[in-house]
Image (cartoon, rainbow, N blue to C red; front, top):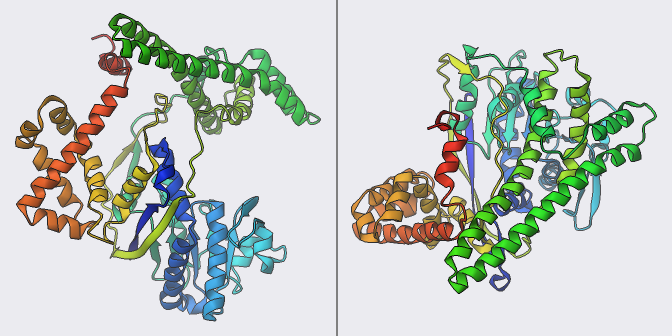
Length: 541
């Protein structure tokens, strides 16, 4: 972890067609925009330039000219685009002796070259000529390997001296990935990591638990898979007969895909039918409640609110069933490597659950998010700093494996143009001081994480809140933003008039957000009781 260098992309996006703005789920839209930006040709081209020039200048000569590097990408499509951009950069600049191979599974369909094409590992690595990639990478023919999960961990190449990371890393995955650099080789005294995504503090936090002393604080109870089995069966989505039919077809060497699909279909149909019925009931009750609200019928509104809560609970139970199904598969797959359950029923349920999960994904409320109007108008790749990440090696205690409490996801919706503003707030303020509104969104989100601030806004007037701790919260948030938004933060902190005006803008934004959430929620009356019920320690208070 010596010489760990981080880069921060700063960019500005625009919604080019405000007349066709759409309301979308905030989390999904942000994720989709992030993915769109990750594979944007200009973004990748800028990173490739940094990678290639760094390798030529600092890495290529090491180990008597045998040093190698790995580029970590977030997905197969990104890996394909990195390979194309890498080869193009080499050709354009006339560089030789830096051949890159790309490792990914299956086929990738992309239109990056102007027409829709299908890319395969063999097709993008013609120089392999059928050789094993590990053995080929060990030769002088290849200096760089571009990976997407495949070979990211569990790959031993002692000549690896540099890693270029364009993927979010955390926990054990982070340690295993970066530890590819630890393999010793004669003359190997220096390694490099250039990271375009992660922060040094996050990398340090990932490594600390495994540095020197690590202990388990308790044992993992292998019976948790039985608890999950009972919980899943109680939902009556599938029957024992469904599981038996699938297992019979799955374990039969002559079993067909048609037989397995037929065994899965009844459970998938039950889930979809109940889910559709729950959604229709919720939508009908919401409409009735709006009519009752317009008529001023308080009693009917109260009754419909209770009905909505019951209908929402039916949908939540189905959402939780999906999550529990995945948890059971992960728990059983892991624990069965350690514990000999000797239980055919668990094994049969495991293979059945794995097959059922993809069929449940087709039942969704998600609507498509059109990014055709989103444009990348400004971009700058900024080198932040090079750190030597020091580990303290304090004794750490790792918790045992537990399934946790599954909770359904309730998406928050905003206009797509507002999501673009949020993304600008996160990355784009170094480009222009005119993006004050975008910066305000970033500060608003940070301030809203303070429960005391939300309490002040909810229970006081604007003037009263400003006298309290609200201004201090704004001040602290602006100070915290100095590293990324230095120009704007300095301007706000440098003049009392601007700070007060900015605090007023943030207050208005938070007030509207709190007000909207309060109006949209049908669970306000029940939330305190729900929180108590969810906490085992408070269950009987």
